Image 1 (cartoon, chains in turn cyan, orange):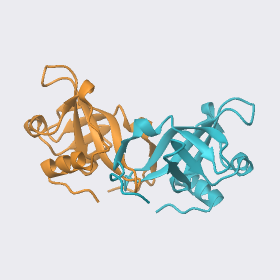
Image 2 (cartoon, chains in turn orange, purple):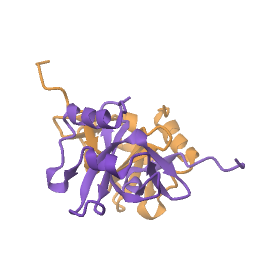
Image 3 (cartoon, chains in turn orange, green):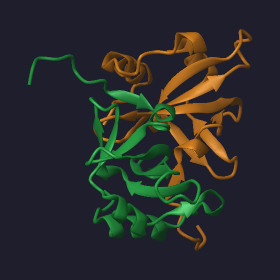
Length: 119
Length: 119
């Protein structure tokens, strides 16, 4: 721990989109496609990971609880403590089947799967 | 107050961008260009209003505390309790002069101007 400038406080949502997401093993899982906000509290609840590689069936979208993403300065991307198998088995959709974020149950399903709880 | 379906809980950040912003007088002030998050707490702190009309000198960007935006279902946009004169006198920038959101002082200046305080 060396003295350092205070970390940058704020970031534009448009800069979060496009950021690479890695597994803890260092595998590149994809990039952030969008983030999802709670309308009432203005809290970021979910990040949508776009991934087109490992399934080999075109790009798919994996909504993840925001709490599982940790920014890693060294890699310049988010790291998630989720294995590829966990991701494959979790909620996902193809672009043409984008979910209705207006349905509270959809968010709850994501939190249930990853064992997180929306604040 | 009639019985109604629970309001939609969540919204993608990409859908917030482009939403129209009105003054309480019903004047169209512009549209949301981007939102700004607190990196540590994942809270939406600011919304950036893009406005190209009333100053007549091309599009300018007005960062606003998120707390001053209220969504109005009827108008399908955000309403802010800020007059055009207040907006003109507040923090703004041209696209090529986008501020560094990494500087905590920049956010504080916005909150000071509008009399809000970041949570």
